[in-house]
Amino acid sequence: MILRPSVLCPVDFSDASRGALRYAALIAAHFGARLTLVAVTDPLLGEAFELAGGRPLEQETVREIEDFFRTTFLTRPHGLTDVRIEVAAGKPAAEILRVSHRAACDLIVMSSHGATGFRKLFFGSTTERVLRETTVPVLIAPGESAAPEELEAAARQVGRVLIPVDFTAATAHQTRIARGLADALDIPVVLLNVVEPVRSTSALRTRLPKIEAERRYRAERALDELVRSMPARVLTEALVAYGEPAEEIAKIADDRDAGLIIMGLHSSPIFGPRMGSVTYRVLCLAHRLILAVPPHRVQSPRQQPDAARQIREVPEGV
Image (tube, rainbow, N blue to C red):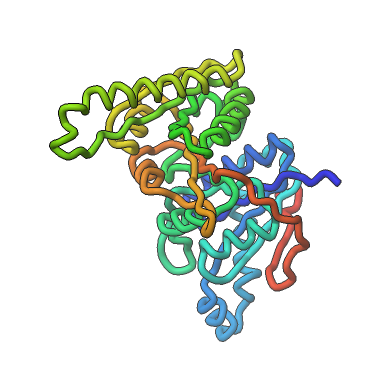
C-alpha cells in the first residue's frame, strides 16, 4: 500500500500563519500531499462557550479556519485536492506534535511567530517547543514573509539554499534534502562550515596558529567531499567561515542572498531530536525560511482519526 505524503500547518489566524499556510499549500499541491490545518484552543475557553449556551467552540473554530483558508488564496492552488481541518484543545506545542505523530506527517510548516492573546497560539515559544521535540522536518516561515503561490515564484524568492554543516551524522541527511530541493527548484547551494574560535589557556596560545590552520584545512577537505557528492547539475559553493556559528550563518545568508537555510537538529539517545542554541540563534537573527531537519525520520504507522478530535475536509469549492 502506497501512503500519500502529509503536510501539517498550524494556524492562529494571524498574517504570519497566513504566510505559512501559503507555503504549506504550495508544497502539498506540488507533491500531491494531504494538507491538514490544525488550530489549538484553550480548554477553559471551550468551557466558557458551553456555559454561554452558544455554538460549541470546536464548530466555531472550524468555521473560522474555513474562512481563513478561503481568504488566504485568490484561487485554490492547483493540485491541492485533500485539505482537512482539525481542532484540538490543550497546550499548542504538545497538540501540534500529537497530531503530527498520529497522522504520520512528513512535514510541519509553521510561522516563526504570530498573534498573541486569548485563543491564539504563542508562536515564538510554540515553534521553539515544537523544534525541541519534533521527529519530522519543520519548515519555519519568517513572520513577515510574503509567501508565493507558485513553484517558479518560490524558486526566485529562495534564490539559494544555505546548508550550515558540522560534519556530524546530521550532515548527510541535510545534504540529501538539499540536493532534492535544489534539483527541483533549479537553484544553487551554498555549503558552509563555521570554525569556532578556540578558547585556550595561555600555555596553548603559541600553538594556536597551527591549530587553527589544521582545523581550517580539515573543514575545507570535508567540504570538498560534500561538493563532490552533489549532482553536477546543481551549482554548489563551499565556504569556511570563522567566528560564532549563528552570527556567521546569518551573515552568509545575507551576503549570498540565500532565502532558505537547512539546519540539522541534533539527537539524544534518550530524548531524540533537540534544537541547539545555534539553531535558536539563527531563528532569531536570520529572517529567512528555515528547514529544521531531525537526524533521521522516526517511522510511525498511519492511524485512523481520533474520534475525540474534530476533523473535517475542506470542500473543493472553499
